[in-house]
Each structure stands twice: as C-alpha cells, then as structure tokens.
Length: 394
Ligand SMILES: [Zn+2]
Image (tube, rainbow, N blue to C red; front, side, top):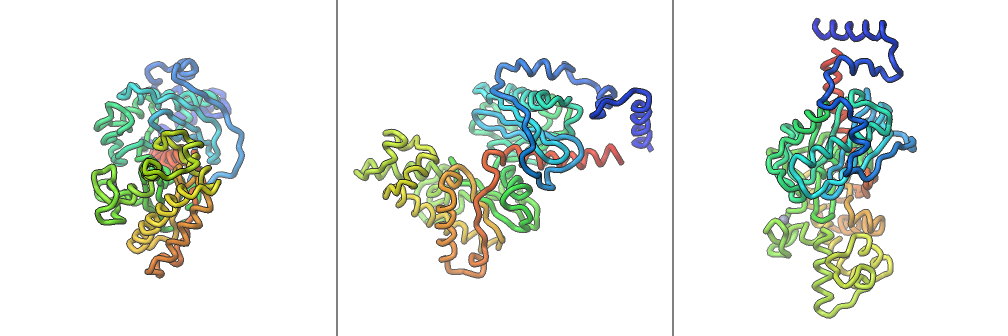
C-alpha cells in the first residue's frame, strides 16, 4: 500500500511538471547529497586523468541489460577505471582517476569522483544511476562489503567499502574481489557466456582464479574459494609468495617466469629478453616475454614450456575435482602470449591420464581484456539494481 502511494505521488508530480526526457524530476523528491553539485565539483577533480563518452560499438550481453544506468568500477593500485552502462547494456562513458598513494578514505572519495565524472560526461545525474559495482584488489566479503586488506592500498584493513561508497554517492553498491569480478564478467559477457560450470585461471603478478558452479559464482565458506594459485603442483618445489612451496603460482605467474629467467641468466644462459626488457629481467613485462617468445628465443620458450606443463597439471586437478566444461585463461601473461600458449596448454591437459574430465574440457582465452573489471562490476550492479528496483517498484 505504502509503495503504491509513493508511486502515485511520483506520477502526479510527473503530470503537473513537464517531465524531461530522462525522468529526472524524481531527483527532486530524493534528498540531495552533501554538495548537491556533483558535476561542477568533479569536472575539476585534480586526480582525474581522463573522461569521455563512448559510441556503441557492439551488442551487449543479457547480463548487462536492465532498468536505468549502472556504473562499474575497476579499482587498481595505480588507477581507478569507471564506466557507465546504459539500459541496453552498452558502455556510454568512461573515466580514469589516479588511485594515489595516500590510501584510506581518500581512495573512496576518488572512487566516488570516478563515478560522478563518468556520469557527468554522459550528461547523467547520479539519480539516474541505479547501482554501482566495484572490484577490489584483495580479499573482500561480498555479503558485508568489507575489505579485509589490500596490499596496494594503505589503510584498508577491514574497510567498510560498500557502505562508505554508497553513502558518498547515495546509490546502492556491490563489492567483490577483482578476480571474481573478472570471472563474473567472462561468465556473463565474455568467453564463458552460457557455461554452466567453468573455472577461470588468471596468471599475472600472482595466479588468481574463480569458479562458476551451476551458473553461479562459488565463494566457499569464507569467500576464499578459487585460490587456484596455491594448489600444490610439486611437493617441496619452488617457494611461493604465500610461504608455501610448489604452488601453481610459483611456476605460472609472471613473477615466477621472470624469476626463473633471471636465475638462468645469472647462471650464464643468454636470452633476447635482456635486449627487449633491459638488464633487469625481473622487471620484464608480459608483453616483453611474449615478444621474446615470438622471436623464438630458446630460453624464454623453455621457461614457458615448463610453465605450461605445471599449468596443465593444475588444470587437470581442477577438472578432476569439479568437472567443468570450460576453463577460461586470462590475465597479463596469457593475453600477451595468446593462442599459441593456449593451444600448448590444451595439448598438455589432453595428455593428462584421466581423460574422462580432461578430454572434453574446452580451454579458451578470456575475451574482455582490460574491460573485464568494469564489465563484471556492472553485472554485479545490475544484480543488486534489479533487487533494488524490485523493492521500490513493487
Ligand atoms: Zn602459495
């Protein structure tokens, strides 16, 4: 009854006041936030790197389609990317803001600024954004929106990010770990569309991962499910960043690859990588490694072959445990190496003994690249936006 009368009140207002094209009059009945003047404030945001509108280039997946606009944020250690998604699921605008090194609540102010800026360049008011999603580089409880800790952002121990950001914007916010956000993106709008059971593996600085079971992201008892990087592939093997030994991450991350190459060069081996990336091989980027590989550098190819072998062992273990139909490989290393690496890993997985699970398994490269973060965050926003709209419109 109450909800109906609120809806009627809005309709009456719309009847007596000429509505503008986007139904903006509803904003008048919503209390303005602290400055009520977002667009002018953020257009002068000192940390803003860029903001622009975007022409529709491709059809959007159903997971991104919904009522109103939503914002997706990709929070990284150096920059914050935000994108506004239209009701038809396409991106209409983007912004990029420096994360900065100060940390703490300052970063939350910048997340809010990124959303305001992206909305402003698209000519949208915040009241037209129904929900915001954001990925965080560290462990998060998606149910409470509290960030446990982030190695790259100072002062974020037990940070109540969801509530802090929501109160700054006056919009419902969804928060999750960045790897799970990327997995959500690939499953909802990328290489994993339509998959019932899939596992994503992201070799980068570490090796992240995520699991989709029966079409839903699987989080586990304490929301740490998917830490594929720390499964053991060699007893007593190479030391892992977590303190363990022989973990997948200790062989397949970019960090592990450059460490191995560094060690081999110090023991007298030669590689073109020193010419491509400079004397300090430890600083080689994924693209440098890919360039050396494409030139047929024997040392780099040997290290990548070793990496592929351990990755195949890890994938086979995951396949035997969960029997997914699809493995999506993403992250900097895989994206740089591309199809030849995926094909080699696939061949090595096929050679694993228990063919019932590894035989039919499809292994594909991630499809969204740098857009995975904002896309997955927008899908999360759609999910809470639907719930939110459902409550107020019922
Ligand atoms: Zn580990």
